[in-house]
Length: 234
Image 1: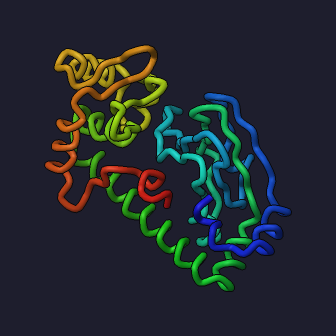
Image 2: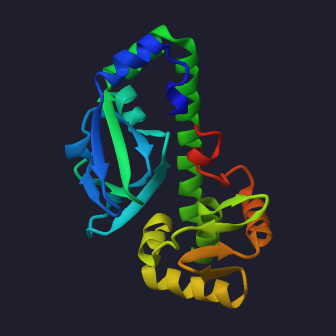
């Protein structure tokens, strides 16, 4: 976990002695307040998304967290707790570890490198939240969907841009704040245009340059092309 890399062996041993472990099956969900409460959390393996329920009971995805990355640090720094309307849902079989919030404070006060990493993490989270607000307020469903697909895709120099497994339409709808039917319609249009294709259970972005151009066009200083866990493992 990059955020903990600055800790000494002794500090890590003391920290690990306080950890609690949560194991989630794929698509398994937990109530955030009840399962984690006033503790900070890290995704040890797999990945989860953090959802908030709307007044109607529909989930709205606040963000995804991949292996090696923390969540809930801001609650600890502010001395607050998540509400009963928040859920943690596993994107795949996952292990989440939690620690007492005071451990964050302890290392901030005694380890300047750890403090710098916490500041960087919080700054990126603030920028990420601003980006999401801008998208929801200013962009249409198709534009939000295309930017989200670009964020979700994994690629290397020799392999195509892919999302594996192909995301469920309901999950994409929750992530971009749209109706499932609208997401399905726009995905079908993107397939017809040859921008994306579903092959062997994975979604491939056949023309990533088109989505990248879109992100740059919409960007200004608002849209972050990649979430925190794709930016040097913040």
